[in-house]
Structures are given as C-alpha cells and as structure tokens.
Length: 414
Image (cartoon, rainbow, N blue to C red; front, side, top):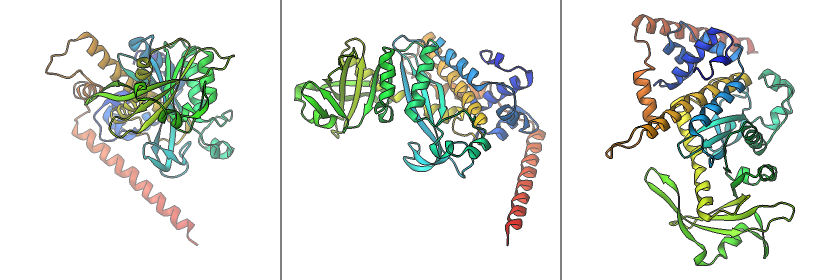
C-alpha cells in the first residue's frame, strides 16, 4: 500500500483504500462495499462508497503504480504482453458500457460489460498491468446516456484491438521490458495493431482464423489450406508450457510468409495441431530477427497466462464482483482489484524464488497465498455488537428500498 499511498491527498481515502484492498483479499463470500465495510469495522458502507465515487484520487495514476510494482518484481527482458477481454454479466441497462454482446465468460451473447486487459507474463509470474472498459457504439452515439454514467465527453468509440494497441503503446512508452505480444483472433485480425508492433520492432504471435489469407512465395492461400498441404516431416511435437496435469504437448508447424519489401523483419504462419482431435489453430507471427520454432511455441503458450490471471483476479480479489454503475467507480474498483491480485502474484513469485520447496510440496500459488493471508492478516472483526449493528443496518436499508419500489410502482399505476 505504500506504493500507492502518495496518490491519495487525504488520510481518510488512504485508509479506506487500505481497508478496501484488505477486504478484497479477505475470505468473504461476496465482495462489495457493504461486506468490505463490515469487514473493515466501519459502521456503514458510506466511506467505501465515497472512495469509489467522490474521493479525490486518480485511478490511472494508481494503475501506473500497479504496473511499475509488477514490473519491478517480475522484470523479464523476454516477457510477453498478453491482451484479452473478459465480461461481467449484468442486469439492467444503466451500468456503464452494458449491452447485449458476446462474452467469453458466458460463451454466448448476454447482457454484460466487457473490458480489455493487458497482462505482463514473465518467467517468474504474471499479472494484469492495464485495463480499458469497452464502450459500445450504442453508448457513444447517445451522449445523454454517457453523461448519466459519468463517461467523459471526450471519449470516442474504440474497438477492442484499438484499446489493446493503446495499452501496449502506453506500457512500452513507460519502459516496460517486453519482447513479444500475443492475443487471440480478435487482435490477430487487426492490421493497425500488428503495424504498430512492427514499427516498434516488437515480436508478436497473434491467433488468426483458418480463413485468413496468407501471403507466401507460392501465392496467397488461406491458412487452413496451407496447413492441410504440409508434409508429415514439417510437424514437430513441442510443449506450449507446463500445465496442472503436465506439459501441454501439441504438434506444431512453421510456414514462411512473404514480407513486403518496405517492411523488414521475418514473418511466419504458426500452425498448432491437437494430437488427439486433430483440431488446428493458426497464429500470425513476426520477429525483427530470426527465431526458432520453439520460441514461437513458447510465446503462443504464454497466452494462457491471461486466463489464469482472470481466474485468480476474479476468484481471489473480487475483480468481477463490483456493483458499480458509473465510469469512475468501475475504474477505481478494477484498479484496486488489480493491485490486490498483483500482491498475490508477486508474493508467490518472491516465495518461490527465495525458499526451496520440499519435494513432497507443490510451490506456493496465488490461491494458497490468499488463503494464508486471509487467515493470518485479513481477519474480520468478531465483535457480536458490530455484527448485530450491521444486521440492523442492512435490514433498515432493505426496508427503505422495498418501500420506495412499492411507492414507485403504485405511482405508475393508471
């Protein structure tokens, strides 16, 4: 917390922020302003709500501190920047950025918020270092709706790849050491993202569709057609990384792509084949210098780290449990959740580096660090009077809300 303390001009929001992060790290069944305030010993959630909505502090500056915190401890010159989006299911239509849209969280079109994240994947560990809330065109074309949700008047519509490009450029400009970028098909099909990375001489391994046209010396062919024409000796069995149940072995092949004369560098189509089902996946690759197939495979395997980051940040630090509706509150909750998860990821990395693990024990993970921290440091108050006061506060608030709903319904009756 000392890393971000200077971003809070007054002592009250600084203390609330500390208590808020402790609440995110605590073993609470649900994490929102009510439960976190009760855990902190407050008499009501007013302080936590003030921290997220009206207190004077800049979430983007705290985000910068989270980024430097992660890079300082996980620094790796060969690190991979991973971009991906995740969605939070929502009800209603007033939460900022919400609409019916596809989200991988549900695997279908649902009423949801979608945000794009940038993760720093290094040898020692991985954590999110930036975030952008995706605001659909239906919102940006409705100024009144945007104004009601607190969206800045200057915000313009931006696609997910455009948001990813902005985050990557900002991270590289801030001196984040990284050699590669990877992402799924949403980002692999964006020409401006790959062009920006090539301009900066940053390598990439970006997933593309099987229908993607690939320029080769033999002409332009679809990725799927190229893969089916590869000889047997073109395939190599390589691991994309260690998983919970062993190495993730696939068959891989590398096809040279034709490079435009005005764009130096080396380009390949990377093909992955499932050894059981035969299912194919395709990646468009670039490097300013020649690299072996094994290097491209390792970068492609790092893409899974962002899924692990989402799972840990949501399950352990409440990333998706926010009940906020406005632009500023979403960014503040998300940034503090990123800080909480970064603490877990870095603590686990430090412990693995400093302390030898007995052969009969598995290395410490974010899950185990959170469990130990919640038990030893983030213990809630056990005072009976405090619990009873909060029970009365919740019931009183719920009764007022219920009465208001019934009055509103009665007033709308013809």
